[in-house]
Length: 366
Image 1 (cartoon, rainbow, N blue to C red):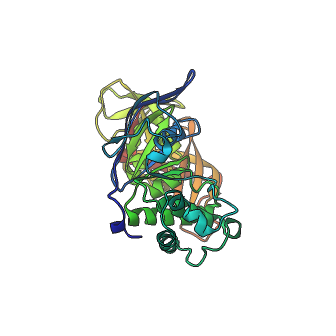
Image 2 (image 1 turned 135 degrees about the vertical axis):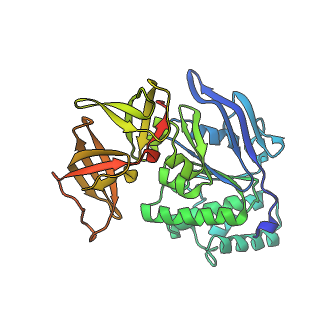
Image 3 (image 1 turned 45 degrees about the horizontal axis):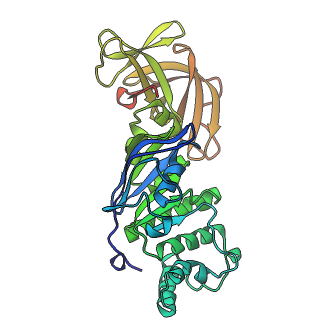
C-alpha cells in the first residue's frame, strides 16, 4: 500500500473539550490540533487525562462540552465505527484463534470487501509490516514485536483518517521497544497518516513525535517540538517530568542580572541570560548534562562541590555533588570518556561545577 493509494490525511482538532467523572475533572477545557501527516504525543503521568482524551477521540467516551473534529466533520456525537479511525492498544487485542492474515483483514471483512481484494490488501500489508509469508501463522507463534506489527497492520489496512496509539509499545522489553519506535515512526512517515500517540514514556514521546503535549491534571501545560519541550521547559513540572533537572529558586537581584538563591551562608548570585524585573520571584532549571565538571572555572556560574555519588550509565556517568555554597546537592551528567564501566571522578573528590547563563531556563512554579 502506498501513500498514493490512501486518502489525504485529515487534521484532528479538539476545542474546549471537558470531561468529568462526578467530582473528578479528568480533562479541563483542552485545545489540541494534530496537523495532517503529523505524529503528536500526549505525554504525562497516570491520571493526567491523556487516555481520557484519546478515548473521547476514539468515541469510547463522550465529552461533557467541546468539539472534536476530523477535517471538517464534527465527530463528538458519532459512535466509534463511524469515525474512520485506526487504533492500536498496548495489549495488541488480537484474536488468538484467527491467523495473522485473518486478524489483519478483519476490518475489511466486516466492511464487506470481496475476498480477492481483501487477500490482495492483506498481502500488501504483510509486506509493509515486514511479515511476508507469515499470514498463516497464529499470534501465539509470533514474538511481541511481531504481534504489535500485526495490530498496527490491522489498524492501517482500513485506510483510517487518523491513527490512535494507546501506549502501543508498553508491553515490550526495552531493546524491542526502542527498535519498534523506529519501525512505527518510519511506517507513519511513509504513509503520511495523522497520528495521536498516548504514552507515559518520555523517551518514547521524544523519539517518535513531531510535537509533544505534556499534560497534568487534565490540561496541556506545554506543547512543542521534542527539542523545545526538553531544552526550554516553561514550567517546573515539565522540566522535572522530562528527565532530571536542577531547580534554583530565589529572587532577582536589584540590578536584574542575577538570581539570588538562598545558600549555606546567605544569598548566592546565579547569573541570568537576560535581565529580569528586580525583586521578582524566579525559578531556573538547568539540565544535568548542561553542567560542566572539572578542575577549571568557566563562563557563568561556578561552584565548588564534593562528589557524594557516582554511577556509570553506559554512555555517560551521573554524579551527585554536595555544594556548600548553595547548601544542597546537584546532579551532573558527564559523557563517558574512559573505558566502559568506569567513571572519571571518584567519591570525595572536590571539583568545580558550573553552567552558562543560556542553559539556565526560567520556569513557572506549577
